[in-house]
Amino acid sequence: MSFIVVGCGRFGAELAYRLFKNGHQVVVVDANPKAFNRLHPDFRGRTVEGDSLSVDTLSRAAMDKADGVAVVTNSDTMNAVIGHTIRVHYPNVRQVIVRNYDPAMRDMLEAFGLQIVSSTAWGAERVQELMIDPSFRAVFSAGNGEVEMYEMVISEKWDGVTVSSLLDGCGEIVCAALTRAGRAVLPSPNTQLARGDVLTVSATLEGVRSLRGKLQEGKEA
Image 1: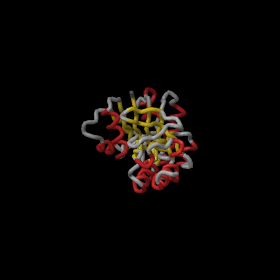
Image 2: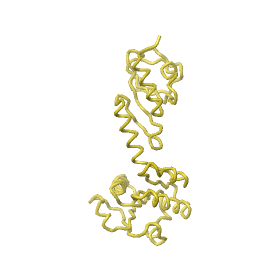
Image 3: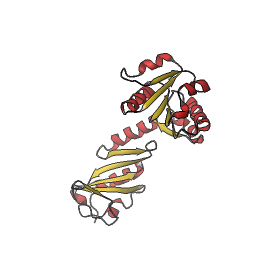
Image 4: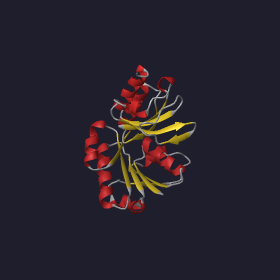
């Protein structure tokens, strides 16, 4: 696939190299030619110097042939404007993703209807999660960490209890899968848990906090 990364800061350079290593065609755009020095020595994609809002720059980057674009400059305002410009003038681009650094600017980015990845918000959410209880392993993060999927091992205290009994009263949390003896299934609310089962749940941080509290109380009568 063909991807364009607009902005060659540390984030953009790392993203471009990862895409390249996965076998994709990558073009990196930046107004500062010295920014390309951040690219990994093994990177073999193209670089395009120029104003990211210039028609000429976007043409040289082959924007009309891109499958996806990541706009990751160090300016949230510029990311919003560039992302919106690409969405309007290049409807063929299937994915336009913009980076958000300042959480206070997220409302503006969302007003443009853009797909947002907030490294600050997601990072803070993840650190908070690990500080509260590292025993719940996050395996997938949706959006910017508002909803995540966690894996937890069922202890002896909850052996024989149903899924619905475990999750009841925990708020925003649903069961996504149950793995027993290496085999995963989609459990029903009445599925009985067994010691050593790995339960995968999708939840907000509040939902996981409620579940943690319940597990610490032990098996209810």
